[in-house]
Length: 479
Image (cartoon, rainbow, N blue to C red; front, top):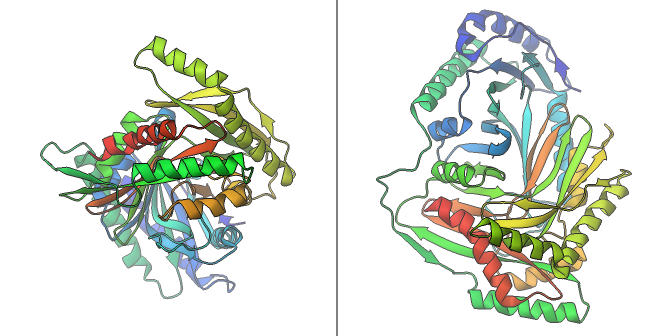
């Protein structure tokens, strides 16, 4: 466990008044640094005046700077991490276990100071994993596993805002210079954020050109028809086939503007953005929570089976009732629910299912079953991620066979699409979503992803219409 050394709480705007006290503390820590690690991490939490983390991202965003952004507007929660205090990435096997080990070692060498009673205080580590563990022909700009402890972290929960600064120090670190640099950086990004709002630019005047370059819609339709034959021959009972839509622009895509559009349009979704520091971004608005861990309580969602929203209340109710009665959609949903319950049981947990519900988003509605379980302290959140990914909602049934077939049908690399993305904090709490309704962006190019679950009774034309509907979420945000 990491050590906690509380000091007198102070605000980020008053950092300079505590600089001498903080420097003396860090000096003592530097002199007594344990021999087990060459580098010690100091994480201190400060109260921040209310600020929009997306405005901070707008102020600091650069193509060569790593960031992680996460927001659920309906819950009034947002998290931003940027720059890197400590990181881990891997392109070989056993990625979840090795990521877990890195997180545990990182927290073990961390000393926490400041006001640890603030919401969102203490270090958060941000994680992303590609859909497939093994590399495909088309390489992904993101490693198969990435874990980052950011240098700066801002967490906003309703009107409470907390800044966490994570410092890696060793015996050669010049503490006074480091603290002055931090103080100047905090002032700069807070001032810039207060003067900059992430609004749509009215004078961008860009022309969007859309191109499908990896497989045409007709090829997707043919893949669905072929998969249905395999299902009829009982090779598998479900497969999720994705489609990639390439979009080009005459001007670089504005990531922060797109995120702002997404959070306004899809407040019930998890809006996210990852930047690898080499010009690549992965953004989206996912409705699907893979898991949430809060104070020993685990929640995960079975989300499968979908229908459009109606143009009015009467039509919307008709679509909803049809979805709830559909044997095909309920069969697809049941496969996901039973898979999750079985995998959690394999970990020794006792999952409890809520009654079937509808999750209504702005342009689509899904069958939804929340699943709960008590989580003992000896089970790490990444152990659950490793057990659940990929669920039948994004792969198929049986999962292993479906994944093999996905590689045959899809000619593009999924990368982070439909893969686990999330965070874990020092208390063992965390949240992961599935990276669907997403897009990979590099300057003037964007690749949008959408998928559909194919089961017995699926209709190729209707599945084509479904993925076109899902593409609208990202297309509207980018334009």
